Image (cartoon, rainbow, N blue to C red; front, side, top):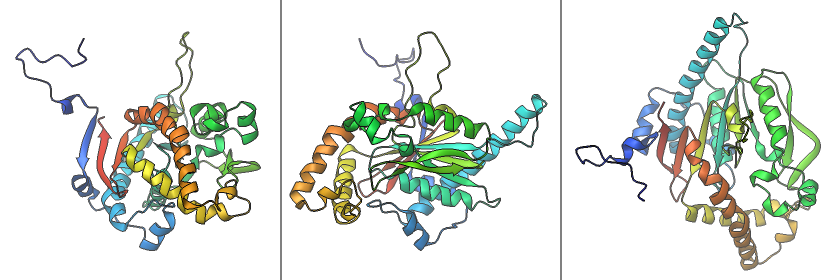
Length: 328
């Protein structure tokens, strides 16, 4: 049986673009939507915000992130107006405010951290100077000791390796407007959650949540019970997309660069790989990619792409070539 949509009665095939939930823009068309949004970051600041092996230029910020900042400013204002209308209907305190939460998802090595930091910096410099915080879901991974107890160390980064209940409580507290909500901290140096260390999020105007699986839906309960997804707390979500071959190449390049930098720290979890020959290090990175990261990408991350509000499609040089915005 064919999965194709039926044609209209006159036999004219339905264009695929008419069925897509997204409006897709070329880089140049998207860039034109910047309008008069000012550039508030310097070249040196942009350089400091980029992640290892994730180059980003001033042109990229101007063409992609300034239009996105402008769009988000409209969305945040509209969300605030809707909240105030609801408060008025409920005869509740209209002075309360609910943080606007933005989720950022995508594969390992795609550049989520750079996107999150650039957006945070741009939004914090909007005319009314909103308070913008950023958390990553790495802190909500189970500690290595627990992952080892559950035989999940080789599944680190997969949905089951996260303490999802704690993450959901964190997001619920943020949305409830609670003060000084605490999130566990993760160290990429020691490759583990740091015992006793926390980040404090205190009633931000905007919160960015960055992570591999933040758009992952939970399994629906057969009895219809209310089971929230992490993405249920998002007002807007972004998926960073790229070809598998490019992600693979970027991952290997990042691993080899870390071998000469962070891996050399005596405290690094990966210290033992710093002294490998380049061929040995490359073989090890290839194994990690094919056995863990590629499987996670295909089974858990990529299937969530169509749940995003916005898809940023990267080319081979990390340059964003296409933007897809979900139709309202």
